[in-house]
Image (cartoon, rainbow, N blue to C red):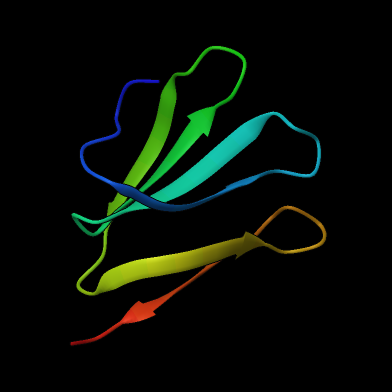
Length: 68
């Protein structure tokens, strides 16, 4: 899939299997459409994102990481 810039630190699929969200070592969070690999959104965090999870309804992605 396009859009991955550095080492991927975590990823999660949406409950319906249509979207994949990932975090990487360069502080990016990327959202992809799984079937096509198309990057739908990107977020640049001010901390190193280490983990993420979808909410049970799939509407929210929680991101956790280090601030140092």
